[in-house]
Structure formats: C-alpha cells, structure tokens
Length: 181
Image 1 (cartoon, rainbow, N blue to C red):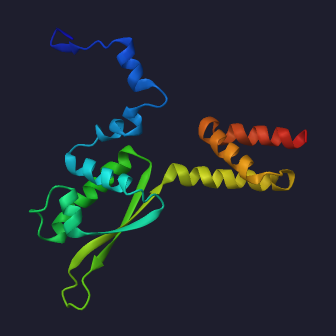
Image 2 (tube, rainbow, N blue to C red):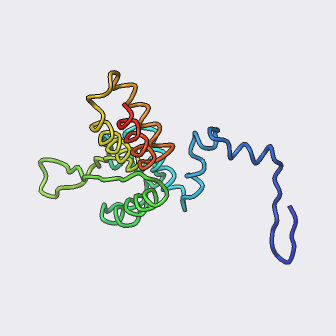
Image 3 (cartoon, helix red, strand yellow):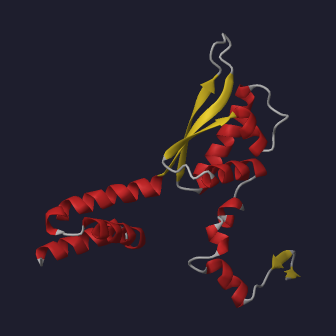
C-alpha cells in the first residue's frame, strides 16, 4: 500500500484478486461478502442463525432467550418492545437491504397468563429471487408441457438457464423452438 495526498492506494496481486472473483470460492460460499456489509455483529449473527438453520421457505421457532444468546445481547433489552424496535427490526431491514431474503416473524406468547408475555418468535424466511425463478419456470413449462417427455430434466434446464440468461432470453428461445418443433 501507499499513501498519496492523504489517500490510501492498495495494490493486490492478480492471484489474490482471482481468489475473490472466481465464480465459486470460499469467500462466496461462506457468504463473507455479505457478512462484511452488515453494520454490526448483531445483524451478522442473526443472518448466520437464519442461514445456518436452513429454513428457506420454511418456519423456525426460537425462544427469546436463545435468540438473545445467539445475538450476544443476553443481558440487555428486558422489554420486548425495546428489543423489537432497536434490534430485531434493524437486523431484518439490514438483511433485506443486502440480500434477496424476505423475513417475516410472529410473536409467541406465554399461555395461561394475563400479561401475554412474549417468550419466542416464529420466523419465516423466503428468497425473492428463488420464488420469482420458480414462478417463471412454471410459466415457461406450461407453454411446452404437451411437447416434452422428460419434464424433470427440462424443468431443471429451464431453471438453470433462467438464472444464467434471464426470462426474456428463455422465452424467445422456447418460442423459436416451438415454431420449429
């Protein structure tokens, strides 16, 4: 590195640069590129908890005590309202800002009490890109269903091609193939 007029200039070797720009590498596999964007450890811990539990398009119930332990804030925010306002909504907004994930949650209350104390949360995690990809795949498959024999392989091919080439490209090519069937 060097400093010129109070500006830092950092030079990386080509090999080092390639490590981070390969199509598949540990940096991307372990999502370090996303983790570095979060403003604090709470959001990083929350994101890691959601992704490690592999709950994409599914629910997970977690106690408030366990969640605070994962976020490393066990001894703070005795009132749920404060926790929700200052931690939970901030983490969710930050994750949704940097990823295609959409997070919803529902409060789990203690039964048989008049206070209705919140003891846990039920989270639902959905990937907007994956949902759009599946919807587009279904739309394209519907137009060619009578013409195909191996729907599973064709579906996988279309899904992969949609991810790499986009909807318009695939639609145009499927229409061309149907005209010359």
